[in-house]
Length: 163
Image (cartoon, rainbow, N blue to C red; front, side, top):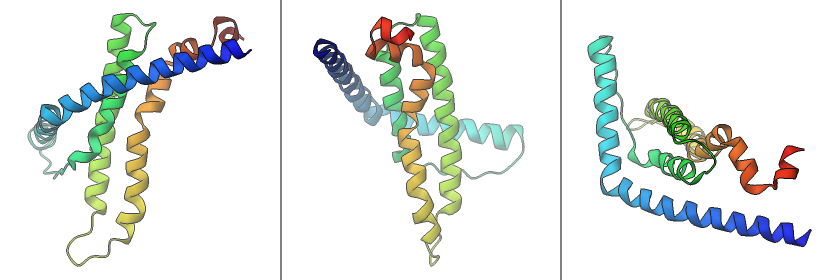
């Protein structure tokens, strides 16, 4: 029994170490060039979609600091083993698409809630914190959704996983 516990702890610590290393590399790339490029592409794409295709004048403002949830999701998907390359790329793409949609929706909600000059910020303060927390935690349930079999295989022995 103790041996299984130590195996689990070792696997978990190795997984966390890999996650931290990949996340730090992605974090560096994100703040070096990725964040500004992402905002630029997102703004241009939304402008093209709403203004050019739909003829709707929609103002989108993007707070840069809320898009960091791409980093842990990409890191988790990168270090997860037991998937074919094509499957991993597909799941990564779907997850990124969901996160991008979440960024658009969150940005619009925050923009609408943000108090103007002289306005009371009561609603903004009460609603924005849970929204930011939801955004920050979203990569983990997405990873569990897309990689549940691999997560079970990673942390549980084969016999226990099949029960």
